[in-house]
Length: 584
Ligand code: ADP
Image 1 (spheres, rainbow, N blue to C red):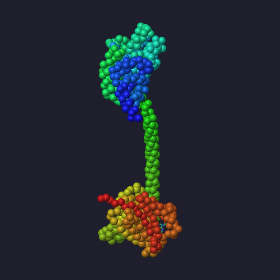
Image 2 (image 1 turned 180 degrees about the vertical axis):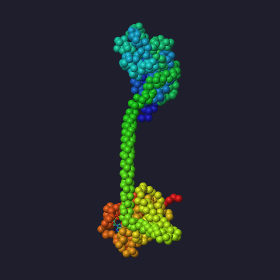
Image 3 (image 1 turned 45 degrees about the vertical axis):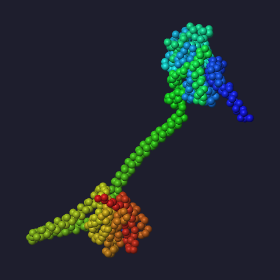
Image 4 (image 1 turned 45 degrees about the horizontal axis):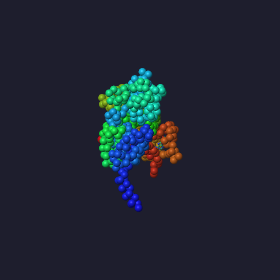
């Protein structure tokens, strides 16, 4: 049963012809469209009887939808709308309407009219700041064609007019609005005023057209250039055979049928208009202006601006903080330098005082030491005098006495020079030092100043690879202090126990110097206070020697400590200094 119905439909379609839907842009309403295009339908149904042509009217959105959903096979529309959807929906024109008395490619234009008694408005440029009536923002002949010309004369209809009033269709309303003085000018399709005049609706002399185009070929006033007439187009899905048959039939349509068609015109001028006005397919060009871009991308721009602002604020804050911290750092460095300088100064002062104190303590012995050469000198001098008085002064005796006097004088001068050298005020330095040499020098100085010096043995186990950078006078002072303390601790003991050992040896990456005595030592409860300032067990002691030694050694990056000898009486003082290996 189902198959039978299908076969019947197929035969019926062949016998009565398939339905061909012609979609028409009915901008003036359905009734107007039906009467406008009925000659075409009538003619096509006669010329191609195997098909059944029917007219479907649509508004702009409806026609777009009908094409997109394949509900129409042919499309008749105005040039503006055609250009708008040509590329988007893939329709292509097969013929252009050839209206009476016009060229198909130069058929449509607009006229902008004012009342004849408005001498202040002569050309389109005079419309700036005026009220203008038009059909609709997308009306081709009823607005866009004139808008392009106005723009060409420097008047942007969107922003430079006092008012643009869109009154819709029919266009007669616009002429009436101008006549009534409701607006200063009106945009209508060319020839409408003449038609209205011929119907007795207006008097042409009451109106004047602006920027009239001469030699347009039209029989009526024209304010704009001319554009091609309405096209008829096929869609992507139209059967090519049908498209060809319709095109051929339309081109052959006699004028007597009420309407005729010509080969498809060039619609480039319409494209140009849309591009200049940046509408339809060229609407995207509006977005390219700074305002358009801002309108379209404002959330992004806002975000970007926020990020940029945050970044700038962050950078400025960081910069500010860096400045502040740098200033703080500079100030604290300056303060530290100042404090260091002050500390160095007082340290120098303290060292000097300490040296003087060592000398003070040794001064009794020193007087004795100097006394010896002076006594010898005196004795020799007196012997010479005595012999001279007696008359037995021989040249040999003079030579012997002078030689002894000179040697003893040199010895005394040597003692004085060493003391002066030791006591002089000086600035700390850092230079390679020979610890064994310094120890010998200290021993020499002490032995020279003491009446009864103990034996001081120096053991040097240092490899030549290790070099110490230090202030030799300061290190000598440390050694002098330690040796003198050791001598003091042994003073009243038998001579055998008075001997001291100075051991110099490598210790990891450092050099260690040990001063070892077998003296009276210290109580365990005194040991923790050994390096405290003013700790002393001596009646004439100051208790500053060891604290100063500690300061000097620590300033050299070293360590000073003391411990009782493990299996013998006496103390073991040690200090270390960093070892610098010389590259060459
Ligand atoms: P002063 O020699 O003026 O007392 P120091 O700071 O040099 O000052 O010494 C502090 C104290 O440490 C000494 O009074 C002494 O009691 C003790 N001392 C230092 N070296 C030794 C040592 N080798 N043996 C025993 N006691 C020592």
